[in-house]
Length: 262
Image 1 (tube, rainbow, N blue to C red):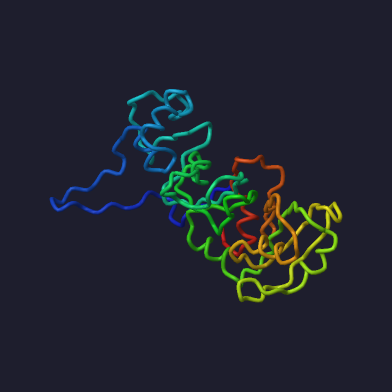
Image 2: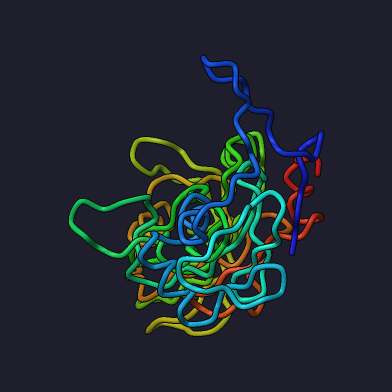
């Protein structure tokens, strides 16, 4: 679990009101309101979590209607301390198929945000994985980190496990050459045949760019039909054994591998 701290460490300062009174940052609030403000869940969902015994305050089981202070009290959800609202959060999610990599969908389809509501922060996806793809997806509330990961100068290799129908063995050489995709010549990919032959197989494909549906379009140009596509790594950050639909915090070393100081 990675916890980074802003310089200064203390709670934000509050200015005086028009009447000259100082706003009290330690004013207790309903725990459900605090959880909602931290992006853990909606107030109604937070009440359900409290009723289910998932929330503790200073080591004691929280109760419905109870008030607390997110500055002076230690609030935990499923044993995990609530983070400060301004604290940078960096996580990886093993995205399942069928989820959109977006903040909200007007058609009501499932989004990856529903899988990270217990992360303690309002995080958003870094880059994209299309709805039919799965695997490693980074999420954060740190815009600087997101920009660094996505910028072309980052030059981090992204690797994918790709199951295909078609002559996988014959396509390896062509897939590894620079090719034109959407009127743009992409860099040569790193391609390895993991298993299979003329009827199909499994390929390991590494790319430095991340253009829209790039690997799917590369495979079409080489006569292959993708059955499944799973991202395994981004640079030094690997999906590992993280279960589908689950998330974890990035380690300090993983965050630092993108040139972010922590």
